[in-house]
Length: 138
Image (cartoon, rainbow, N blue to C red):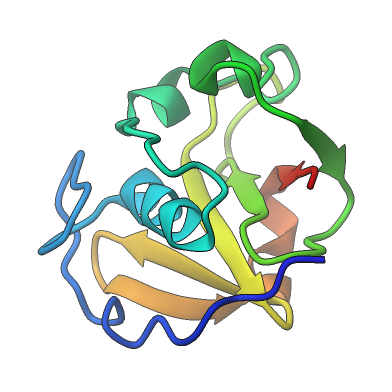
C-alpha cells in the first residue's frame, strides 16, 4: 500500500481555475494529476480536465484516456493516489463524470472546487456521489 509522501500543505488554499494544472491554480483533475506526480505513479502525466469531462465510468476505461496503466476499480479508497470519480445527485446513470478527488491517506481526499479552491474533505462526505474509485496497482 502506498503512503502519502509528506504534506500537501503547500497546495491547500490554491485557487480554482478551469483547466488549471498548477502550480498557481488547479481544477479538480489538475489537483489529482499533481498528487499522482508527487507519488511517482505517473511522472510525466500531462492531462487536462478534458479526460474527466468525457469520461463515462460505466462505459470507459481509464486506459482510454491515460494510456497503458495497471488499475482496478475498488469499493473504497485503499492507498494514496486512488482517484475518486463523482457525479452530481441529479445526474443520470449514463452521464459523464462531473468531479474528481484524490485519496491522500486515512480516508481523506484532496479536491479542488470552484468556491473553495484546493482543500481536504472526508471520504464519507462525498460517498453519495461516488460512481467509481480507480486504484493503481503497484
